[in-house]
Amino acid sequence: MTRVTPSGTVRITLPAGSVDRLAGWAGFARRNAVPLAALVLLVLQLWWRAEVVSLAYFKDDDFDYAARAVENGLSWDYLTRVHYGQFMPVGFALAWLTTRAAPYSWGFAAGTGLVLFTLSGVAVYRMLVVLFGRRPAVLVPLAVYLFVPFTLPALTWWSAALNVAPLLLAIPMAISEHVLHLRTGRRLHAVLATVWILVGLGSFLKAVALPLLLFALTAAYFSAGWRDALRRHAFAWSLYGSALAVWAVVYVIGARTTHDMTGWPSLSDGVGFVKRLLFDTFVPSLLGGPWRWFSGLDKAVAAPPALLVWTALAVAVLLLVVTVRHRRHGGRAWALLFGYLLVADVVPVYYGRVHVLGAFEGMETRYVSDAAPVLALAIGLALLPLRGEAEPYRRILSREALSGAGGLLLGGFVVGSLASINLFSSYLGNPGTYAYLGHARNALRAAPADAVILDRLAPGEIVKLSDTTYDMTSHVVAPLATAARRETLWHPAPSADALVFNDRGDLVRAEVLGERVKALGGCFPSAGSDVTIPVPPTRGSVVRVGYSSSSEQQVILYVGDRAYTVRIHEGLGRILIPARPAQVRFAAPPAGVCFGDVTAGDPVAT
View: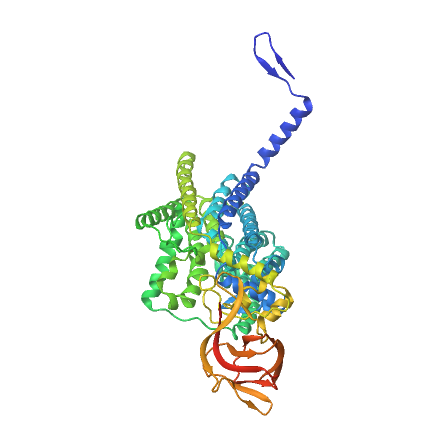
């Protein structure tokens, strides 16, 4: 109710029930200010990341993963295949479910990664609360985790997100359960930590470092040294060690059939890689770096300005000195982070990729994306007291100094992060691939059920060349086809009406580019009642036999021991045979049919 008092002021009187509800909401907000603020941060990062990720599209290994998902059932062999050194049954399961549900739907595929990352943010918040309690200061490392730039580019590449996103969830969940086990002694928490370790190991090779991180955390903050940690928590170590052993056995078995790409780099390449990864890529993230990217690439290759790299290094050194001087055991926090970076991010890439691509690999931000939860952990350990910790600080800084310096650093970090990602987002997008897949989807829907579609290399700007067959159109478009159509894509029959995908993704008449041999006398002679045509010994995947026919009729041809019936048309035409036999034999061709030339080569669009 509103009324005017004799003095001229306006007084608003609310009903008693409304006042009680408002007071209740205000009390709830005060009691839950920290989780509500964390929720706001989670929503903001989801909105921010979704805006950026929506600009990206499928590329590179994404086509391999999508094709394998429709070619295989959710079998043990499919899940445990080692893909260029990566053992990732969790990622393959996600790829299988995503592709079967919505093939080449970027919104669905990218949305899955965004949901997993947001859940990992919830897990990081839980980890921080378990370690330090529900205090406002835990929002600082949480904000760093949610907005650090080097985690976002991995979400713009589907195959990378399948590795990283589940691991980002597994790391903080394993840490939380492990710390709860240390504090309560309940074995259930150790079992749950083991489950999350297995999730990590099933997502990314880098998860091998997770049990080592848990041991180092225990020895540094929850025990009187490493011997005490080993003795007091033997049950947990036995579980974690068993998980590692099982993973190692399955990995070795799967790796026997994969191509070995490992090798040691030269000393200069190795040192250059470590320097670039740690000092040019990771450290600048403290100020929201890298602030600049190699233009034209959407794989998040950093190119930070030298001045800002040195500024970030100075800030990192200052932060290290201040936290070591004022926070008891503060140096151990940064040692945990540095150790994790070495074991998880430096060693695997050092031995696996640097010998091929050189020190430049150190500028790939995706190689440190998994370290984000450990960065949040280290910041928390370096700044905040653990729950129940006695005398956590050597010296207590004034609240004004902490608020001023912390606000300046966090504000600079957020501004730098927004600037870095805004620039990165300008490089995203693949309209050519989007258009190609859209055309292919429509072409497959419109094609007759009995259409024969020959295989050829997909355009290089769509799919990079591979040492497998997954750069062929039959695999690239397979997720868009029905099960029956996929079989004909993979095993096309000889046809006089064969089609092929052109570079736009449309189905057009196929021809063969290769060596052509004409028959002497105009027609290949018959041997008895058959016509045998020798195939030129050149490279290629298709044989073309030119013919003339006085009417539309059927001919029977043999490729090896297999017979095919092909309908030919009146006049001049050609039969395309997707094979490379030494010869093609036509059984008793009808009168009025002449086979006049043969070409061996590769199919092309006309």
